[in-house]
Figure: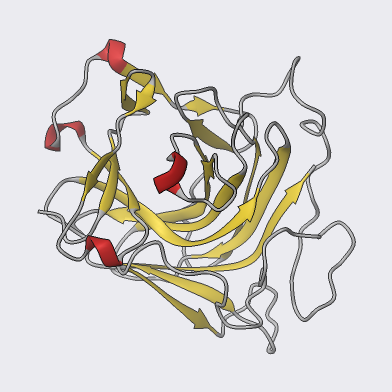
Length: 271
């Protein structure tokens, strides 16, 4: 059984597709109404029943350092002819957010990017994502810290659960965005990986109940422990989508009880 609410996609680089939309299976437990958000789970096909090859929509690998999925086009598709302005722009510099001063080129669309102010503005996606402030800072600042995600969503099915903290911001359809952050995976008994992700929404308030979402982008996920590791990606907002959830995600085996990751210096920037 599942011990929380979870959005499930089949693995192997594909999702089941019905009427050109990825099949999203939402398991709602007794406390699901209080969760407000659902966690993204990559579950093995054996636990749900595999879909036929002709029914699958492959994830799109790209040159931006990540992958995109969706049934109505692809966010973050590979560079080349036909890409919107800004796709070939230089990558942003390495940024550290300590205090109120922001270095030129490091302007970011998210609030509280360096977690000087605790974790305000970054709630967990569900009650199983335990969000807290840590005094470890990617720039070794003694006046700042980082956001800790402890992924405690677990169940009996095989697969991987990827979820974390989020912030909703506006998005411009067809525009190019960069996203980046520093990630620290402490040494712990459970193995896992971490990175950044976005869910796109048609409404301006990231409200899935009004419009739903079948489009997303995820950076490459890292596994190195006991070192601050930069992660980044570039993507295009799909046409017709006007907001996005910026997600700081920790991924672990579904059967493991806990996996903790620290995040710092979150940049989201329109090119």
